[in-house]
Image (tube, rainbow, N blue to C red; front, top):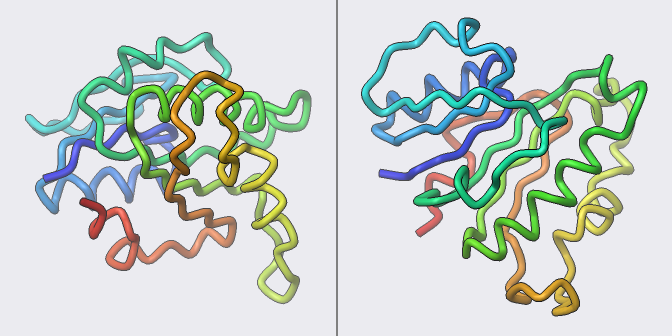
Length: 165
């Protein structure tokens, strides 16, 4: 059983991910802007009101968590400010501080049509500091194990978080 923190649980992909995780016996802490949109009832589901654009208390959110799933794609917010960049640049150091090394990141904001290449995978991971071994931030230099998906074709059964120990 994993304890998973999910951002974007009320979106299309996020809802499927939460259902999948709960059906596989995992515990989910879902951070959502509008709790009423997540109409699931499950003893393994904890709903926390919040948004990636809020000043989130990562120490509290990450307590007891094994892995983090970010499934956001608010194109409207992303068009006016670089929401995802700011959010992930705060999240990753907090994950390192909490000793959490697993991240699944899926965002429609980074999608391209199926016939086009995805040039963002490596630059995006480096840009967010996922490949950094720097100790300058005062946290552990241990790298985050991550999966980045921008195709919106996640096969939940093959997500590596299921195998992460």
